[in-house]
Amino acid sequence: MNIVEEATTEQRILLAARKVFSQKGMAGARMQEVADEAGINKALLHYYFRSKQQLFEGVFKDSSQRQFGCIWDSLKQCDSLFPAIEAFVSAYMDKMIEDPMLPLFIANEMNRDPEGLAEFIDRGKESRACFLRMVEEARERGEIIDIDPRELLVNMMALCVHPFIARPMLKHIHGITDEAFRRMIQKRRKSVPEFIIRSIRA
Amino acid sequence: MNIVEEATTEQRILLAARKVFSQKGMAGARMQEVADEAGINKALLHYYFRSKQQLFEGVFKDSSQRQFGCIWDSLKQCDSLFPAIEAFVSAYMDKMIEDPMLPLFIANEMNRDPEGLAEFIDRGKESRACFLRMVEEARERGEIIDIDPRELLVNMMALCVHPFIARPMLKHIHGITDEAFRRMIQKRRKSVPEFIIRSIRA
DNA sequence: ACCCGGTTTAACCAATTGGTTAATATTGCG
DNA sequence: CGCAATATTAACCAATTGGTTAAACCGGGT
Image (cartoon, rainbow over all chains, first blue to last red; front, side, top):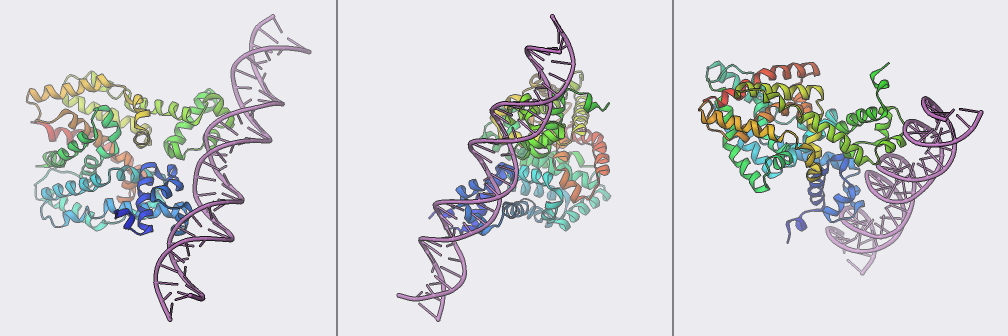
């Protein structure tokens, strides 16, 4: 009856692997733990995914797509910059609320093996270019100040992703609970776009 | 004659361990690699640091202090908010240019063992409180808009630290070299404080 | 010269871990 | 049913890895 029980073995493996890998990282994850989490034998992992590396790539591919996939799409239908920024921040944060471990996991593994994993994050290339052009045009129309579009994008992603990267530190420094953290994120869904727009409005 | 040759064995070990641990993380680091990097026998590691855990804590304590230590001090002598923000961003970025692997390393290990490592990042508690009060006062004087000081601090740190966390992705997405990355960071030393101040100025 | 404390090393050990194998269970199908 | 293909498991293996041990080295004091 459980959704986990209904799913195919391969899906259960990927789900378990995503949990273990994103928590412990490639080096810290243990095949046995993935097997336990999926409720199967360790040898069965190698039956579906020949090696740890292959299982990891399956998880990473899925995770990076999950994180970078439909974020860009959210702003494709926006015709002006400010709503696009709001849509981007909202979509990005929604994704991370779904799976808060993902950003740090991806950053970490990209750092470990930049060349090997580069191919996985190439999605949304044209959507990103589209957004950069949108910024450029808004600048030419004088709606915003003179700013490098790519720098603006870096700042946007920074403000979105950082609370999830630094969550343990924020929780300790500000002494907040899980619930307080979620409220903070909800507040940021509105305050971050305001922060950005206020700083670039001409 | 080399500085490494002159240093004491313990210093060489800590230097090598910091390099290996911050690149590979606790789980991925190998004691043998630390020993090789330090140019000594593996057993000698356990002579100076009884266990991997103890060596790791030595490195982490040093690293977290290096990252969070004197950043706050830089703004203690500032009497008004905007120069304090500029000083903070400059100091923070200087630290990270020195050792670009540190932020991701610390974020990662804090995520792995939040309780065990929490004690190490308690430095600068009162300086941080001092900064938050400074923001509060500026708000009461009407110099800046109505913003939660802690949220402002999160945003500041986000804009400083994110390029170093996401460096491999930025390098791949924007197709930039190491040299271009350093130029980008140098640009951000000025643009980030401007970005922040523009968005909070009343 | 001799010893003694701290330092360094080579060899070794036990536990972990990714991966394999061969046998068993299950499912689908003629 | 019977049989073949697929799914699953228990037992096992080789390599890696953190850690230990006992011996050797080395400088200084007497």
